[in-house]
Length: 494
Image (tube, rainbow, N blue to C red; front, side, top):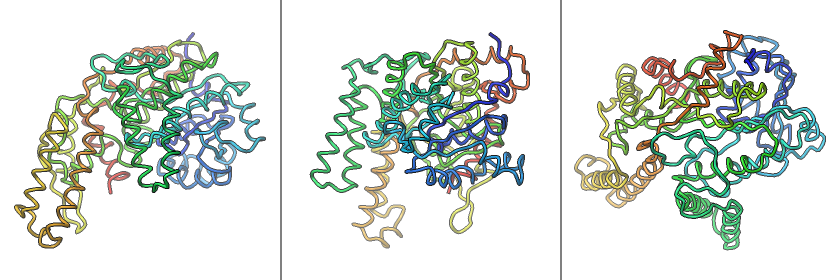
């Protein structure tokens, strides 16, 4: 069947979006309301005890963002009434049954009216407590699925995952599903219920010992890393997202399911305007450090491909995939949304463009003076070599080789303790990012490409531009220098 118009497809839809305060969910909400104001209803699930608290969060954490300035401009004085008519904030929590919606009447209404569910709720921290990550990324997927099965008019469920559920993959990474119990290293069968039980028992044990919140957090984070590594995943984020996918694929039944696997998500490419982003995300940490003159050495290779994709292209692909599912144009369930296969962007490109940008537009320090960024970063092939480097650096500093003023000011013992903490923090960051800075995989996007081809053959030519997610259309130099890095400086770097 042929595609028609996305505008027509969205008309009259009742959509439930989880994780509504998240980066992607905000963009999705803005895009839908901007291109199709005649949707029936947009229900936004936010972590809150009730709808009143949820409405407050929606106002302060979503609608107040600069992202909505174009939509505000379209509606002018009618913006508030338009939002009130089309959008309803729902208090809840994906980590509990029924998505934590306590209002029975509202829950029944959601089950009766919702025809599309988009699950974008997630914790994306690489170093997160196992119980927290499992609650949102794994059990949250199950709770969303069970909620979807109660929706009498449900047409489709779209689950936002990550391409990096593949772990430290090499070669061409296919858009294929996980089997229940599958691990990445084949060492043992993965039992999701056992992982959940281990997290619960460890938490109970710590609470019985009256451990401090700091201790509990540290132990549970370390447990997350241990369990992830045991089964072949580099961090608890990828591990718990992979388990969420396994649950969905194994238990979906007749529910039409789409799994979107974006790679590294960057700022907007085009809509609603170029360069919008929230905070410093993944690879942007290194851009920010470079701009601040703090990136001299790092784990990584200049030849490593950073599979990155602008956020608005992710949103566009998700909406087009929903349309395809509704038309039965595609039976493919999984879509890699990235650039490494068709328009690769390397660490060397990022470094060169960061240098070019910050040379022309340097950041300023606390005294208003321009910060000089280094010309070249020394890239190191292992965390251990980086660790040795920073240890030597701080030992020399301790002896007063380069920072005698600090040694005199703090005293040797205080400076030594401060240096140890800095070393620990820097090595910890490199250990977390190593799998991506040394990543050797290329993400196959065959399913996504077929989706693009079908869309281009559709009846509505305007859709091709308005819902573009073709990575070959990205001019990396222009985008980084004129959209992404300026947006990062404006919205993310402090």
